[in-house]
Image (cartoon, rainbow, N blue to C red; front, side, top):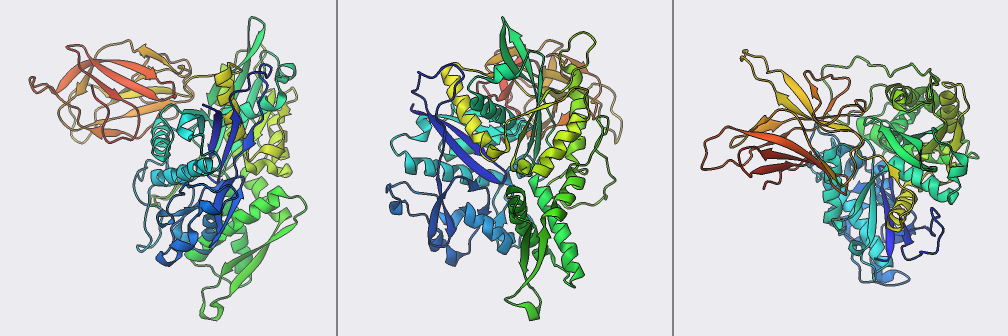
Length: 614
């Protein structure tokens, strides 16, 4: 094992960082030299370039395009025999991203968000969503495998003597990913070439590790016991919120992840749509009424415009063009211009409005009939989402005497915060909620690469025995149990919930769930329901909820399966006791042990068709 590798599999861009593992001369908590992996990718038919990131877009080419989109690694400066994925199954990277504006119905975007969307099916071949029948379809899992396979090939093209399955790899996921999405990510990574011992790390924690690496241990001089760090991570498809508290053991400061927010589908994609709406209104005033194809193309064009406007303060406007569709516009385009001032105002008021700590996101009335697309948040106000998160979790922070806990430090992550206007609005809004000033740590210069670099530093720190953020599982997990009673025609039996794993359960630990026996259905199809909570931090294993509070428990994807029955016994129910385990990879396993014999069944809170049984 020569390297620790951090992989940020982002909604919009993916980045790989790496560092040598053999440097034992560094002082404690000092980071090694961490580099970014140059990633070869097609930027134009027949043209391959190395870029520091891989846009997470998959273009499904037409038959006649395939040969010109291959990556021939023999043309590299250091030729290798490494084969990149066959473009007939899709092309990823810069060219795919550019095609999103020209051929939007052939490009898969936001596959990472679809990976945690259980209304459609995470493994269903439905992407690109709403594309015509002649376009081949893929699943979110297949996209994930495709992205990771390209990154693995990029690694091997540069380090052929250091196979990635023999390195220490840390792959990041959103803190709010449910167990099914984590498990599918794990399966995709193994299918792409990683070994089963790779580590999953929450993205906000990786951003914190990036900050820790940059301080070379001096963070202990900048923080004190009792401080509270809020991480606001606004990515391409999601917003992740995390609270980290600063504690002290025997005079030594430590960090503990206290809470994470719910999975919020609001991020850069939503902002692109907002700018597309602004551009659509401008085009309508020019007499252009866009059709659905043009609207999708405009959305992707606005993504590029947003990145230019947010990244460079000297850029005051960006032209936006889409292909014309009328007979008089064949081969031509229609255009408008997005001004920096208008774009900033739209994003500020739509996503970062000034609000109070007690404000909550609005639950807006929705139509009874809806398209089955991604379930974006009905209220995109990120400032209100942060306020609600702090209201739900800040009371759990240990405080001195009667002094109420408050956020003392703030860390931003995500390319959205390259914009000083958006960053300053977020800072000032959160700062107005507390009596004491808040210190912002980290800078805007590494927002696109922080997660990958932080993941690599985490891998190094874990191997070398350096600083670790404690925390365990981000949520508490529950099983739904149907109550006994008289059947009522047309009415489902009431459901109660039992906590099988408390929030904060550490990796590599297990717990026997106390309480009464439960009847496990075997030998016939059954539907198993699971729930999780980010707010019920005091529930311990065995805690019983006689009703499901919808505002506190979120239901995960149910598992429908038939558990193996004992052929020698005609039993519809087997009395079982629960045991929960959290693996070293952070995966939650639920074991059902028969109280009558040695039989046991394992469920992994995942999206597999069948559980592992023993």
